[in-house]
Image 1: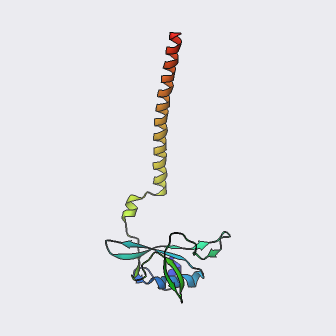
Image 2: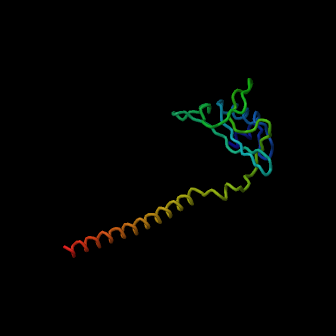
Image 3: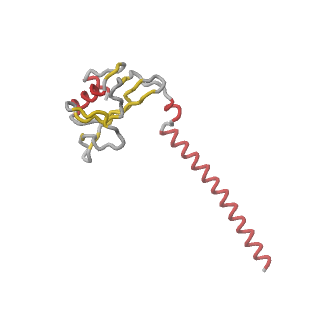
Length: 150
């Protein structure tokens, strides 16, 4: 995607309008894509976060007009419908590098997430096993008491 943007003179480290980015992408793909932004409350800056390219069931490029939960930021007579959550009135910064964020610190990698899931699963199974052993021993004790009182 960086190459596509670069071909349209949208290079990292600068601000662009939503219309600029959308025009480059639609010229390249000939389809309507979705552009997602991230607004940093600390810096009051809007960053390009994600560009979604859609495919149909035959894995051919398709318009992303059916994406749920995306706002239509602009319905321009020249550019058409722009699917985005970006603020049209603010510039969008295309960072050269992705800065470390709170997201990185709070979200786990797929490997760490899998390991955490397995650890929780093993812990839960061990607890269930101890509970089951206790119930079986109580049942055996009840059976023993019944046998001795008969």
